[in-house]
Length: 466
Length: 58
Image 1 (cartoon, one colour):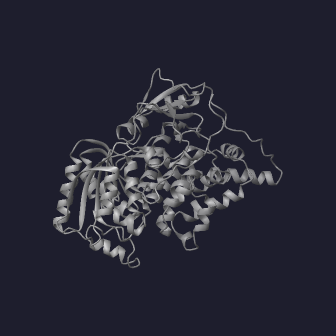
Image 2 (cartoon, chains in turn orange, purple):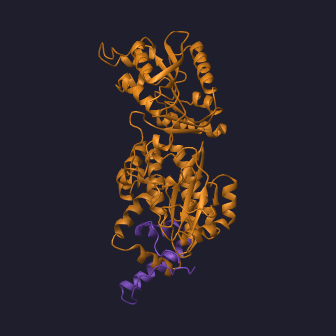
């Protein structure tokens, strides 16, 4: 059993993972009392029933060995299929996670409960359904105390969403670089005079930053005391939560078109090529049931959808935010629940980061695939990103899973388009022979098929034993 | 006994802002807060020592 490295900030609640994959939460005496209050509430039953809260039960008799003395009780949680982070989500995902948080907060305020923090890291996904996983966030409400998580909500939800919606600037690099989010003063610096007229900016950003500075010297305890004496009450939090909900629900990001959003209609495949490719992928997918499949460079998710009936979870990754956001919205509308779309730049994937460089894990630490698709990907990595074929194959081998990979031939129109931007003779080693030689070093090639036009080759392979 | 302090720093400005954002529900509280500050500035009333909300007995 080991402590989850991302769960250490709240002294009343800490998560542990057992060898057999169970997720346990150890609670302090105060945390346990809060849990009992939550469990007895209608909110808990309702949230569990509609899937907005992670499945939770008391783990009677279980005591993680490394839990500090004073643990009052342990909970067992349902496991989420694949842990993801806000800096891998799309605009629509961050917005839906924010709405989930506010809806739960509004619901539990009615039963004298509150969420003591507002971290999007407490939200995970079952496909495109957001679910709150941090039972330890619920605590009994102190009637005269303001919403402690408001600033964190702004820093990690409101400002990143505004950055994307109002400025068209992607929030993911910022959240990846700053796990605490965007501070009010930073958000104010980003907003122009015109932006101050936009919904929510004057209050949640400008005034927020000004008050932060104005009351820098006061302590939270002093202010809380003053507010309590002035008669602060939960209705004020509720009014604020409902206004924030309206604000966030109205935020829109008009992503427009990118080179990738129209890829399905503008590519070098003939209809026969596309049919043959779909048939090849379907055969590989149907070979046996899988737990976790990865679709690398998923674009509109056509092949991820093909895997969905054969894998419990499909993580569909692409670097193009707009494309993944469209995929998220389409999957949500379709009611597709086993594909998780994520914004991942494969040339710069999510690293180990945070406290001791392990608070937030790399992709591989969060789950190894048992099937990987790398379709229409190799030429982009090799030519656009200048990654040698040997490196690409070594990286695919590191994943340790069976592989379906596509090699676009040098004469393929898309490859020619990519090469047109390079000097004459560049990428001379981008050949079928070189790719097959490298692939065969690390994988056993089970099957290969040339496309009807001869522009592309598909391989199904499994890793050689180490 | 319940922990006296939240593990998260709420930010003092953020706490005050909630009165402004609370709309009509917060108006009376905001007025009372400012009035007590005016009395304090005019040395009519002393600001009480800072106290955390009373802990709930378990």
